[in-house]
Length: 175
Image (tube, rainbow, N blue to C red):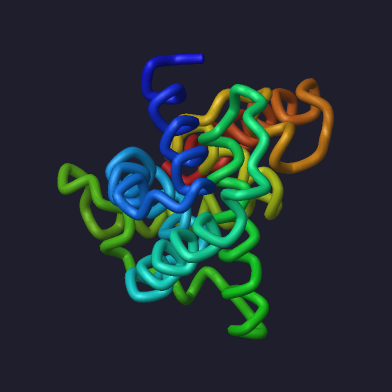
């Protein structure tokens, strides 16, 4: 377990013991990752911010039952994933048109390039997009992704590499 993971693990345990100051520490440790993950799935700043607020409440509620298994980031992102899925169900329908072009934040890309990348990304299946987001955006390891998605690690790795190949092929065809 990395130093950051140990800090997060400790913060969750302290939250479970009722330490309110540990919640602020947890926020500093995971907010950026959880927000990036949520924004990548929801494509709405306000919805992603809502998920972060709900995430902190859910962690406060669940922390007394938390059992350290050396993967606190995966535990937090798993909660964020469930909250995002609930948010998506509330919307009833989620489509690529919901994404604002500014969500692809690299200023070096022109509007057309961003539109092409967005279109190619949405040709991936839902699980493929999710694995790419978890690994490339959030930085989770494949074993953590496999645990969150409740699938073998080999499936998560295969899904990621397959998605990257599809993206390359789609982008080459688009250019």
